[in-house]
Image 1: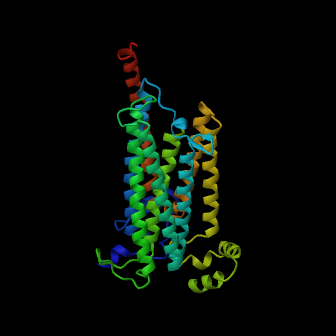
Image 2: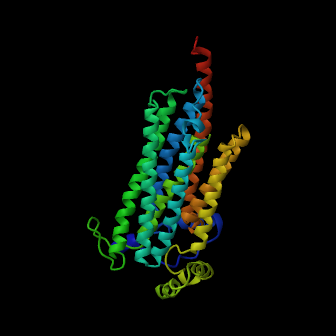
Image 3: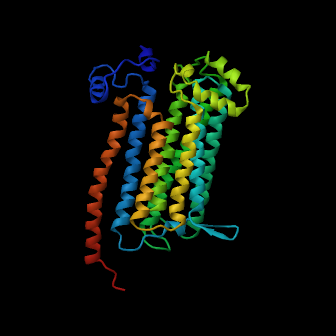
Length: 240
Length: 133
């Protein structure tokens, strides 16, 4: 009984190519995702729902920006920084982008080492990912502080359309929350990896089910999604 | 078997390890999503390049349709790389890929609706609420 939920059979059943394969998988009245464990499938479905949430935020931002008769504040100038006497547009956001991409790189490698059962490297790479994530959140806190000091509020700002503040705080705040949760998630799983839980198949204290190295990949899915959302925020909010 | 192979590789210089792994994916195919580290590093590099490109679009102050199309192009390329390689969607069965990737595409319909809606709101604001100052 318990085994049905945890199957991740190595060999996937043969499949018909193209659309026929999709119909065959979905109509077999057993499970649609043949070689994908429920943990992974549910993470994907959760990420799909999260996609819709972020889509709604970005859509409302688009609607506000398109329908306002007041000029939108120029993000290139709003997020510029003076570094070493030089005025560089958008530099903080660029650095944050590179940090988040780097964290995605370390996460992808952690998944790889996880499946090789290399405890130390997996945990180290996951902790490095968490550190990158924490740095990102720290820089975001700095950015928020700077903007709030300059007078940006959800109901107005010194440079133009009043909706700028509401859009900014809502979108980046929700994304920052996701990064923070991801950091906690990463540290929790890295601890389990380091302790060897997935080598001895120790049962979780909450679910009392055995853990597998696949959880590293599932954590990775969440983390890459956070990076993915940032790609869209960076393009549509900061660069547009 | 996998562990033993890694152990031997671990004693070689790191550059050597990457090259070795790239050529021997077969040995590690048995469990889960196993792909050569070299591939991840390549994607990582590309993400850096694409991010730099989109940053340069702003830095050089490119405006108008060229700016928007470049931004969207780099955005889609980056998103594609992350989903396909980092999230392993390229190696999942189509039944999962379509179930996850198709619904977000339908958001574009919502986008179209809201474009019309905001044009209409904008028109109303211009016609009835233009500041008199």
